[in-house]
Image 1 (tube, rainbow, N blue to C red):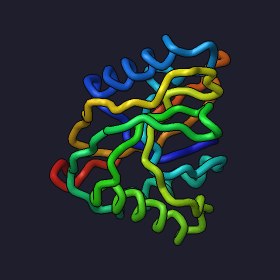
Image 2: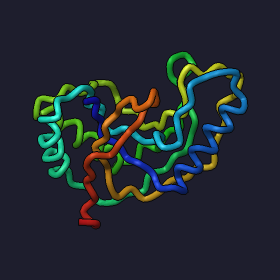
Image 3: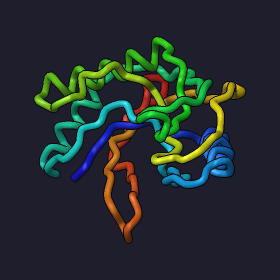
Length: 173
């Protein structure tokens, strides 16, 4: 089972992300663009895991303390020599502390974490062939009040992400 911990967005934020992705698609010759329902912010990639470890991950998630906070998407960027396009989030303190606490606690419990600097982003597409220029975007976002344990699987040939556990912020019980 392939697992990760993520923030999923409200319908309004998702619609703004879809508009950014569709604008990129319109100006691209080719690429694999993220499906609407798969637009998310990964906080920790866990990878292949046995079903037995899910309870351990849920227990770790339950020890993470955070209050709801504002997250702002404020830029476009690329990785992989410009072929992977993303929408980036401001590296505000509450977001960065949440991500650090989650990965730290997972590592303490024996889960292997990527040691690279965290760059909060939402993947819009991969293998993009475009002459579209990176440009400023009007910042948008929402209050983040929960994060989820997600399962990634191929269903009918389509990559599908399913939330299997949710941890809400302190203001929400």
